[in-house]
Image 1 (cartoon, rainbow, N blue to C red):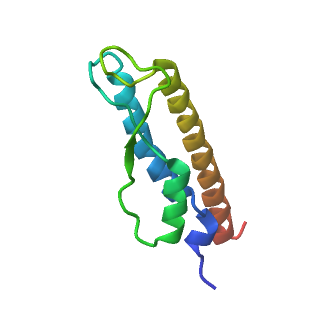
Image 2 (cartoon, helix red, strand yellow):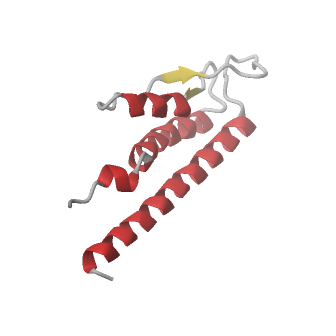
Image 3 (tube, rainbow, N blue to C red):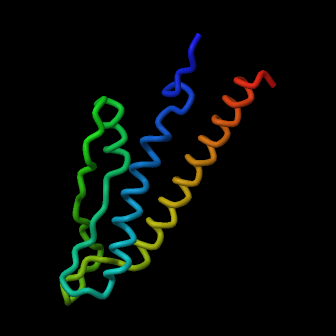
Length: 115
């Protein structure tokens, strides 16, 4: 009987890849907090994961512009506190998936070594 990595790892590899892409977008938003007319971008993580589960081919995630709660006069839609919170939550979720994968890999290694 072979090892099914899809069964062992679940959605975590896809989730980590999507979270890495989201981190880049959120970091760009934070870097451009003072850039006039910069439009904050994000990924609908839950929607993209649902689509990834239905499709076998992973397409590039759909990037959307965020609508600000309070528009600024210079046209920038980045809200610093909201972006920081989203970046932090995304980082924590990435770390959770990484921890899960590390535990699964350790378990597989022990099974292979017969421990």
